[in-house]
Image (cartoon, rainbow, N blue to C red; front, side):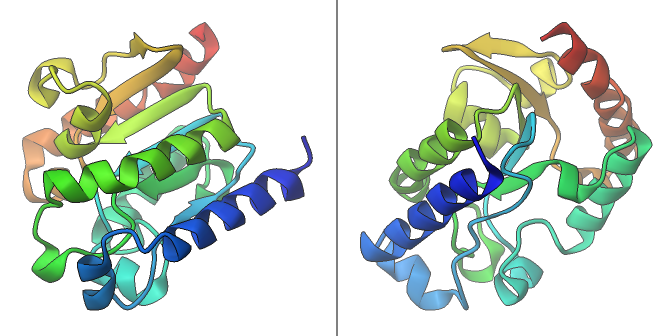
Length: 189
């Protein structure tokens, strides 16, 4: 499939969210929809929870401090941001960066699933507990981080959220160590 075809499908999906008026309350408080960024032909998709202030302003996921840290970690395994695809469950910034509500996550989940269907990554990397629990609700991030899980025909790799690692030195090293396993996990898939 040509890049443009996947990109066209993603663009149509992005438009669909607006057309379907998903989470109008969230949309009202946000500057713009933050859909996703990166290579639609990537083998890897990173999924965070929701856009923050910088993301809301720029219209791109993971561009604040956590995003810079994510970029640095990608470099440690020989990848750039353009090599992967990055998105969030919820596509609008929640007010005051609060956690996304369960109904907001479930409203956006079909669109996230559709994004994954278009991209067809070999590896879905969940960043943080919200993202993990969207796909694997019974697992605890502290127990399964860095351990690939196969579920419904997809391989998921739960990782701590880069933002959490920025505020917790011990977690930062754990995240770096877990991240280092990505190339190996991809090879095994």
